[in-house]
Image (tube, rainbow, N blue to C red; front, side, top):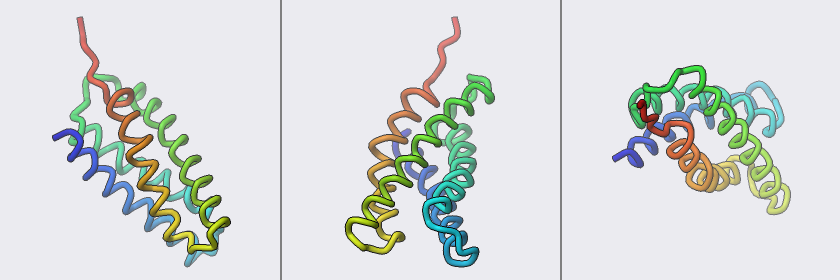
Length: 127
């Protein structure tokens, strides 16, 4: 059940992330690499909030400590998504919108979920 809830949370955060990136590129004419970072930051706040209170129901650790761990994972995720999207876009000449979706799938399951479940939102046992 946690996996499914985490995917729903990531989906909503990811949609916001992707839409903000598109807005930055298509309407503000920002290059797609910094636009990925902007979208990633906005999507991370959405995903964190849903994950803490619903997906992982992990309110037993201080919000400051937990958010700091989440920020580390989010920065790593943004770096992986930016780098991966750039490499895939430049080497295949495919549209950044498509390569971003491919890279997002890889990063979401191979990096984000694992670190969120076993580090950021890990249940803290109080003695």
